[in-house]
Amino acid sequence: MTNQSVEARPEIAGTRWYEIRSPGNQPVVWQQATYAPDDGIHRWMGSIAQDKQGNMALGYSVSNGTDVFPGIRYTGRLTGDPANTLPQGEGIIVNGGGSQTDRFSRWGDYTSMNIDPTDDCTFWYVNEYYAVTSARGWQTRIAAFRMPGCS
Image (tube, rainbow, N blue to C red; front, side, top):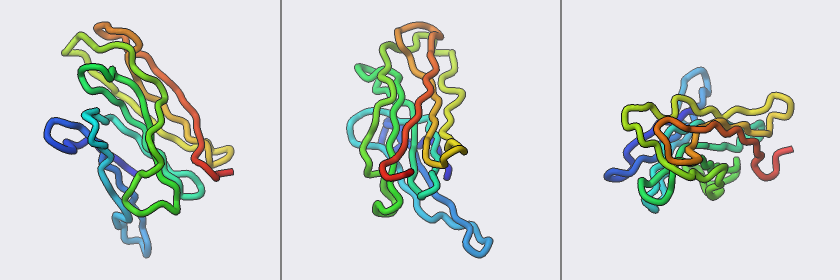
């Protein structure tokens, strides 16, 4: 699993994700798509992982520059969902409460989606958000969740 930030439509960032498999030692892109619902919200700085059942979760930063402040959300797909889709809806880990005012400060130097090795079902996600408007006052949030049916 891998992903990257892309321009999904003019001036809207989305997250392009890929599942790469290696049947017969020849890597192939098994499925891929861009996650960017048509709601004017940028989705970038993602991280993706897959649990033992083949369910996927993609976490990312969100903002729209007006009333959706830098926050953290996720989406996913179950192993039986149609290929090239993330139809499980969007979950909110934390809504942002402010914006970054220092335009020269970096944003989102890290984001990480990992599977808990003790059960191979629990997704652990780490990312940054802004609780209040400030120059460099980002906060870190750690979240854990499972996709339906994994036990």
